[in-house]
Amino acid sequence: AQQVVFPSLDTMRQQLQLLGNEYNEVVAILLSARLHPRFFETFQQAAETMRGRLSIQVIDSLNTAISLGYLVQQAAQAAVSGANSTEINRMLQTQIQHVYTVFCTRNLRYLAECGSIAPSHAVIGEMLGLAPIFVFENGRLMASHKARNARHLVDLLHEFVDEFYALKHIAILKGGPVFSNEVAQMRDRLQNLQ
Image (cartoon, rainbow, N blue to C red):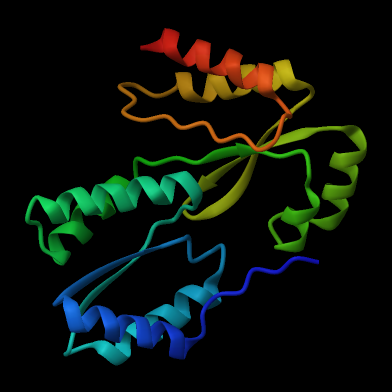
């Protein structure tokens, strides 16, 4: 089985010390603490050891993947514009409330292994060929809908996006050849929303 291994407390502390040699302020935007609480807590411990020598803002993005990357880009743009770490933190706390991650996967075993769904649900969902749709809500993975087939999946995702007014960014991430036609349909439908 594959396993995600995060850096140790000592490694995190060393990296923060290296940053402290170059910068006075650091903004650390981390994946949702609810996805991996131990990583978040360990990073906070490492940051605490640097207090007084380095101003560190530790931010729970309440998200992951592309949404986390988007928040990092927003922080970088603010830093380039001259914002300090406190201002960046304040801006991100507002942004985080308006960033949504929705995803669908047919392989439910990984979600069961990380405790996001019950193992029995993973087995039944895979047996029935369901494609559940999950939404990150307050940093937690929540089941939203179950797509019966690829066409239904596109309809459900389109309905979700259609609920929002004045969208700024939409990203579609797809792994492998599965759902290629559906992703193209989704892209076409999203372009018609603009």
